[in-house]
Length: 312
Image 1 (tube, rainbow, N blue to C red):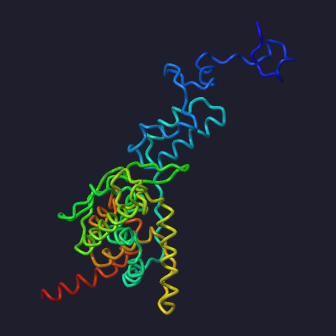
Image 2 (spheres, rainbow, N blue to C red):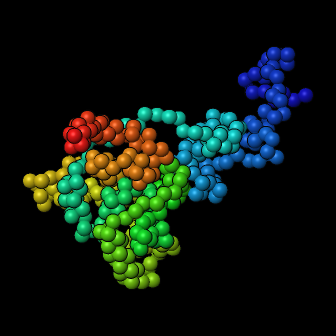
Image 3 (spheres, rainbow, N blue to C red):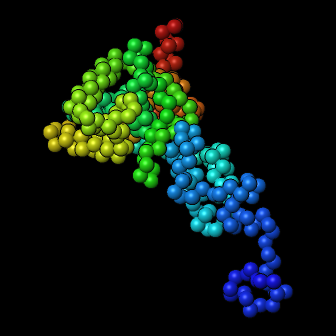
């Protein structure tokens, strides 16, 4: 009987040779998943499976694929099971870090004034006035906008992973509706007109295949890094033009923090802010913006005292 052991064990007596693994282990080592009719494991070239699209947020899709590839590199044949487990797993609870120093309303207004001349001004305005995440806005379609209501419906998120545009659910896995103010409605109407002009100017070179709200001048979806780096450029432009009132550095995600902290400081209830931000539970908002809420708690005693004085 021919030995199936490793070459470096060939010199050992047969009694000292390691036992041949059971049949189900041999199937797994061969790159098949036991109990699944010898279904092949996912490979790096087909890691973005069609059934994943729109089912999970892009960051969870990436996490599952990296886990599968890591197991395959280590020679483990249970990658498919690992992917399925990760897809079903609940993310570990962790303490959310408080946002750093963010702009106050006057600084945000100054930034938006500078951005007004850019074709993507509506993106930054909508980010600031709705608190939506970057990927959520890049996934937004015109059919998700109702200018008569007025409101937008945030149904998913988009990201670039391994050089490919991946669309999935929002971070919480749920859709939400966010109301709009009159000024934001006008900004979106103007953006629609500019989009029509871009399409007319591009002519046959127009590459738009879906009704994305934010796209390049030739119709393609915008790369996420574009809006992030452009914000840095716009801040620098403002600071060059107004050195006496320079804006501190801020990330695109900080516009979301400004949208959260401003109404909280104005006394808006936490669950209302949580609904606009898309937090799965108001407790997340409480943890992330605890420093803002603690300021309100400190003033609660004085508010109660003033009400009692007025009643007496």
